[in-house]
Image (cartoon, rainbow, N blue to C red; front, side, top):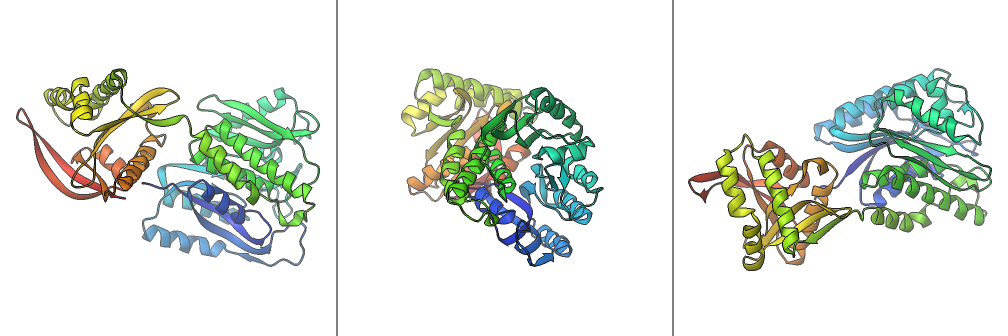
Amino acid sequence: MHQERILAVHDVSCVGRCSLTVALPIISSVGIECSVMPTAVLSTHTGGFTGFTYRDLTEDIRPIQDHWASLGLRFDAVYTGFLGSFDQIDLVCGLIDSLSDDDATIYVDPVMADKGRLYTVFGPDFPKGMRRLCERADVIMPNLTELTLMLGEEYRDGPYTHEYIDGILERSRVFGVGRIVITGISFEEGHVGAVYMDYETGESGEVMRLEVPGYYHGTGDVFGSALVGACESGLTLGKAVEAAVDLTVGSIIRTHDACTDVRYGVNFEAGLYDYMNTVRNGRKGFELIPATTDDQIRIIASIGHTVWNEAYRGLVSQDQIDYMLNKFQSFEAMKDQIEHKGYTYLCINVDGRIVGYAGYAPDDRGLYLSKMYILKEHRGKGYAMRTFAHLRDVARSLGLRCVHLTVKRDNESSFNVYRHAGFEVVGSVDNPIGDGFVMYDYIMEMKV
């Protein structure tokens, strides 16, 4: 199974919950590998502490990047936070170009200002550099101070009107990002939260909670890390924002009630269990359901007809496509495989609709994945990887050593999906399938 790998680019404060000491545990808690690129190391964070040590790691970023590139490392997502200079912004742009996959999601938290003012370590030109990085992103999560600085607008104190925030969201289209989340927004005294807009789907909304008095360090990093973990786990933007707000607010409440020294950050650790459950429940739109009724089998046969005519067109003749569909993936053929040949067909069900299927059976080699197809408009959403993970669990539960399949040797798109999921080529076969037709396949295995 392919495990999602995120690169978090932040500083390290050895004491005080913020930056990488927050991002690493939160993102890892939902099953995502979190690699790190430290931009600086501090003995403590800078909020409320004096006499802290600071070591700038700007000169180490490029050598680390070069080493990773020599290993062929690639990242499914990149998440950036506090960057201390224009040089670091340029280096992060290089990281994105060098190490992220073409379809990687770039998350930018443009940490540089709050409550109407730039942090003292930054000069007045820094928002222009941060805007340049944000324009490379897919998702940005500024507070309103950071957003107005990058837009060149005057900052206003809240509470805000919905009309004003709607206007800000509309004007933020100039960044060219797919999604934006603005933190620290209040529409009425005593309530604060986040607003969001998905410019691609039109989804927008707000998540507001009761405001806890006081100022708490590291809450932006808790929110950003929780948002990234939830989004990369497949939650919609609205559900991801809600999960991030709840973890952040819960962490503040625990810290406030315990009268803890706020310099050490907020107690997010005690909220990770609930956060993990929230993310897990948010995935419930996806289900794998055994096809047991004639109606289910007819639906997946129809999906097979649609996908095969897309996938194999140009690779084999139309006569061969029609022959294979009739012999292997017609309603009658699949019903016979289920009832007499030990096959299980799983419906890939999303929000109550069957959008794909997988067919498998145990054999002497392992668990044979005979077919897996997903309708075109539902690809690229992680459903294939989650199905592969389930099949791996099935094979393990049966005491089998691998999941294996065959794929046409010149079917590059399917081959790449299987390689990405962890399958490896272990052989090839020229397989006569009847009526004079032959399939020229690779044999691929995924160890369990």
